[in-house]
Length: 326
Ligand code: GUN
Image 1 (cartoon, rainbow, N blue to C red):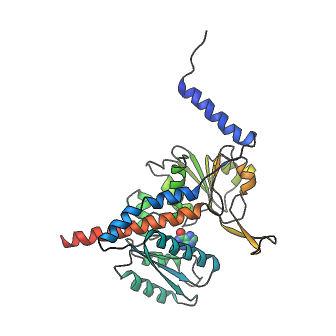
Image 2 (image 1 turned 120 degrees about the vertical axis):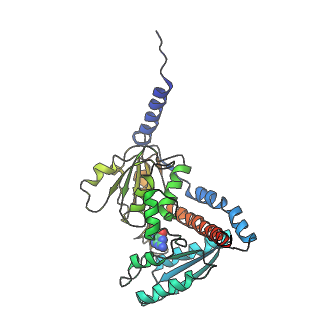
Image 3 (image 1 turned 180 degrees about the vertical axis):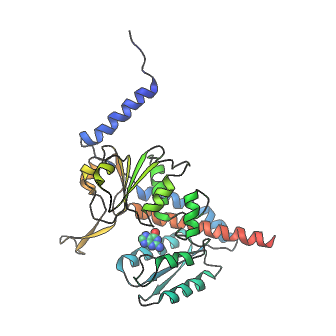
């Protein structure tokens, strides 16, 4: 006699087969289209930017670059370009690496006293003689578009509204918008930086839509790292080591998010180097279900979320000014 299989059980078998196909049959991973998703996030801002302009409150971002690290220069220029494309005013201040900590802090006070500056960020890393913590503490939480000020970090941990750090918030958006929600999944993060690893864990562990994950954070002192990365439904590689995550460290059918951006020597390239992520893309993409590319991956989302935070900061400034007038 035929018995009907419950739909949930059938779906489970189909999901399992699809997952197995990715590794065993060498089916290439879906390369997550970060450009499309970043463009979607920015398109959603256009009306809000227009409304701010119409009310005489054009959103403004100030970016401070200390020293002349070539990678930081590139990032800062790309942030300015995003602003131009969206109609956000931006100004950039380039300061010498010899600036003292005190001079830099006073400079931040001066910049953020300007009501036209709704968002302020200092590009990291900073020279060794300047405390990143002191810099993050000095930025007004309402203008802290990086989400690095301890007030915003605390709000994020509590799941309260505030500015979220751009890279981890962008990764959450990538996962959700690409149909790979982290809800109920085991997310393994490799790397515990204040910019990516730690806030990523804080965001995904929240009891909230688009989060609700079980999170493991691994780092340089983790024993038998591969045994943990192999348990990941979603693996986030954010330790800054070129092509460190190999195929045998990845579960078949996992979603891999590569936050790395490393220069490796390449005599065949005109520049003498090429950019690679923290995962070995070729090998890992034969095993994963989906993977983000490098370059053209997470970095696009970081900048899109910076635009989101800047627009939000301008809106909050307008709301607060209106409340004061009431
Ligand atoms: N350096 C690397 N990532 C970031 C970032 O998201 N913000 C700042 N300010 N510096 C960085």
